[in-house]
Image (cartoon, rainbow, N blue to C red; front, side, top):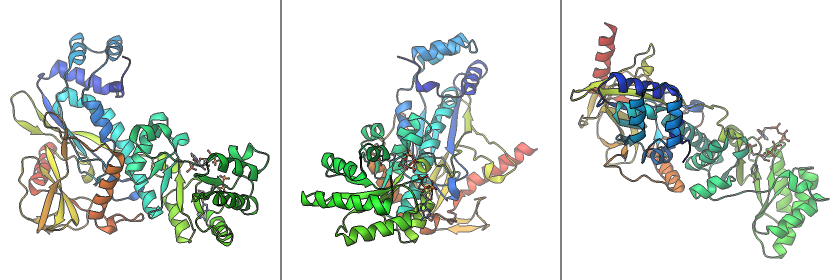
Amino acid sequence: MSLSHALITDLYEFSMANGYFETLPRDTEAVFDVFYRTVPDNGSFVVSAGLEQVVEQLRGFHYTKEDIDYLKSLNLFSAEFISYLETMTFDCVVYAIPEGTPVFPRVPILTVKGPLIQCQLLETFVLNLINHQSLIATKSRRINLAAAGRPVMEFGARRAQGPDASVLGARAAVIGGCGSTSNVLSAAKYNIPVAGTMAHAWVQSYPTELEAFEKWAEVYPDNALLLVDTYDVLTSGVPNAIKVFKELRAKGHKKFGIRIDSGDIAKLSRKARKMMDDAGFPEATITASNALNENVIHSLLQEGAPLDSFGVGEQLITSSSSPVLSGVFKLAALKIGDGEWQPKIKLSNSKEKITLPGEKKAYRLYHKGTRNAFADVIALADEELPEEFVGINMDPMMTETEADLKDFDAELLTQVVVGPRAQSIETDTFKIQKHMYEKLAELPEETQRLLNPDRYPVYLTPALAELQAKMIKDHKL
Ligand SMILES: Nc1ncnc2c1ncn2[C@@H]1O[C@H](COP(=O)(O)OP(=O)(O)OP(=O)(O)O)[C@@H](O)[C@H]1O
Ligand SMILES: O=P(O)(O)OC[C@H]1O[C@H](OP(=O)(O)OP(=O)(O)O)[C@H](O)[C@@H]1O
Ligand SMILES: O=C(O)c1cccnc1
């Protein structure tokens, strides 16, 4: 036993929990929602990820002896509260949208319902896991969209912000579309194909580049992706690679190619392609790497660069162009003792920042009898969805003022993931990726493009919109 991840939390969660314990009835219950408002890279949705680790942490959630000893040593909390933490059984129910689902702003990705004290203690680490992995899965989806079906290898471990970010980031990158990772621990843990080529050090370690390629081909005849830019791609790297391809082919090997890791990749890959084709090696592949992102990949392919696959590290594993997903964890309802559930709201000057009160359920609406989704609707949890909505438009992100929604099939987005009625969640990383592609296929294409995607509407039911409007008014009195 040692200090556990249950302490990955801000002090104020413990301060509030201890305070609730001292000042509110012990049986106070709460509902909190996790959602986000702004999509990284000006996209229109986030690919949800991180749920497996949240569920892993929550099923059997407890504090270790070392955790408790440390909390005691702070002398901040009552002995009674500490002993509550020591013997706590986790009683929350968690609802969540499956990993790999495209999720739009304001839609609850995850909802926790249970003892207020316990819910509050979850905020920081739930956000840490969901925000990080959803950010990387979202970036990966963009990069893989730009790669247009060509395999993308995740190469980011050396540039990730720490070990955990590399391992979980590689997992999220696969959820978002990558086919493999160079990160051996992540590959082993999450059953991801492990992949890789060679570094410049290999080429530098032999007297000549040709010898370096030959030695590699001797040891790895079926994985000969030769790094051709240590000295000069066109006058040295590619001609030497071609010599080695000849030897490999003579021995019956078929899988070989080059990796270009610097310079003008479009120009170099075109010339290298021609040299390899002219030498009779049309099957030799070209992999590109070097600070790639979705924009560079898109531009390379627009220019007609004959690239077969990509290795993408730093810009993917850190989502460096848009490195923050600011998902939040907000109180939506409270029940004290045997009292009624009371909806709770947080006000703000900007309409989209005002929280949605009450326990809610989110649905995806499809044109009736099809798998074509056209909007999401957030409803109060105890509402039956009507057959149609007339004059609904409470989405502050949309410019239209009103819409009629009819002839739709509605599907609940969440499932129970922790609690007595918990369903099993998908943990196969590639099945989660497949789920993402199925869900993307349901969305309007114009919401998916990289540049200025169309907004996808997220409506509130009239009952929820009225509750929100009433609470805004009541609080302003
Ligand atoms: N044809 C191209 N169009 C757009 N961007 C490109 C093209 N070719 C390469 N790039 C990108 O331009 C950037 C160039 O970066 P940089 O200047 O660091 O490369 P370099 O100096 O050739 O390589 P290194 O510093 O690794 O030796 C990289 O992100 C690379 O992926
Ligand atoms: O650029 P990324 O998308 O992160 O891809 C991974 C990079 O890591 C390696 O570079 P290395 O660490 O050897 O440094 P350098 O190529 O930048 O010199 C590799 O050669 C790629 O360029
Ligand atoms: O295998 C590779 O080619 C590789 C792995 C990590 C970073 N750069 C390259």
